[in-house]
Length: 79
Image (cartoon, rainbow, N blue to C red):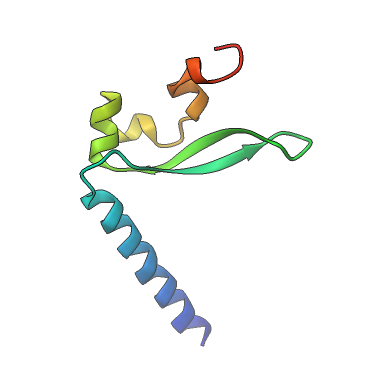
């Protein structure tokens, strides 16, 4: 049962990635980064499609792991 659940999860993740990659609009998957009090302080990019790379004029390797505040500093307090 656990093996079947892992297979299903892997299949669903693959479908999600394929859907993101096939989308013509820029699309990124963000994970919140929280401060010590638990408030969201920033977001990190965990996946991006080709359109997002083109919109940022950069490679996927640069986007992955980047903080949103680094990519859009003027949208953050003090930016």
